[in-house]
Image (cartoon, rainbow, N blue to C red; front, side, top):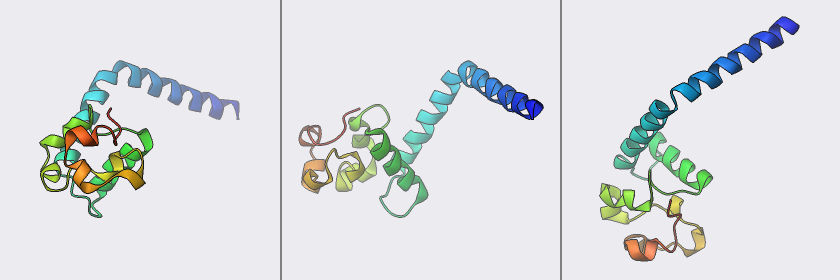
Length: 110
């Protein structure tokens, strides 16, 4: 039993060290993949789009760096910023989401 616990501890320790050493690469990789997901976002049952919505709702964020990242997507040109960015789903009209100055007051800005 002690050997098993020691092995698990070593695995967790190695994972923590590797995560710390490669943190910049992990961050860069995550940001580039999230940028690709935003570019291909289509608000359908697509698993990448669902992942973006889940990340934004869970972390209370919008876009990669901030909500203005959405302005460079095809989705924004058609429908504005997605509802998953909204602070309150009740106060999130599509016409407001198409106007960045109005949307800034209704979405998570970071």
